[in-house]
Image 1 (tube, rainbow, N blue to C red):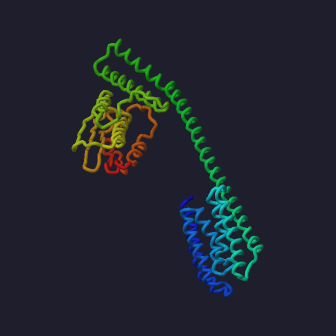
Image 2 (image 1 turned 60 degrees about the vertical axis):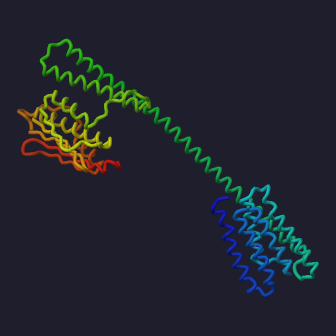
Length: 381
């Protein structure tokens, strides 16, 4: 029995009290003592039904008999309505194998009431009348059974709907897993193989050709970047396939020296300034700050060539600030290098996630990018 169903007999008890007080005042043919006695039995049964539905409703059905003992052959209106409701409510909340006891007790009480009336010579309803009216207890019981079956059917439909939803989600996950595996295969076939071949070719060039120290350093950096790219690509493929693969080095400000070494090897003179004491940063902020620096330095190489560049990494109390400032193109503008044109948009999106700010634009000479990541905001991301 649910919590709502437990409140039904308690509310009914309140209405019974009101009926028991008002009915004798509006019906002079009723005996007040008998009405109050029957009402008391009905209220006691309703209160008991909140915890023991069958026992409480059976007790309520004896209210008919209690009124008869005090000279009231027929039940009062409030008691009669309560008895009908009790039969239906018992059928709704208790299994049919036991709830049939309720209308039986009501009919036995009606017969006993007529017998008591005959013995005490109390004018009122005859035995036939009481049996006729008490037979409607069974009708109320059938209505309660129908409501019980309807609720049971609704529960079954609810469980069936939940099972169908779970099955649909399972199918969707299976389709998603298959699609991820397909994408993983395509990524591997289209990109990882080509990058691996390029790395091998760079290794062959470095080992067979006579190169000066500067060119050899650039090729060595490209070869190392290519190997790291292959590892990262395999990690991505592993994620798509839900398989475990060796993880590539995580982008982090702790690896900033490696990033600067790569761009220096590509010909970009860079100076690094670090302010403040480094602190433990949330991983997602650490990665985002690294990516902003990486994108800004890449843009310098792409648009300004080997321009003297200064990188600032500032660890403030409540924020991390990264800044890249270049002196502008050196000599003729560099030839365009492939790019998607969305680097600045991507940097703004990374900073906006943390509620930070990004300032980017030309200076008197050169270009500056300054990003501020609030640390407190990052903790909640």
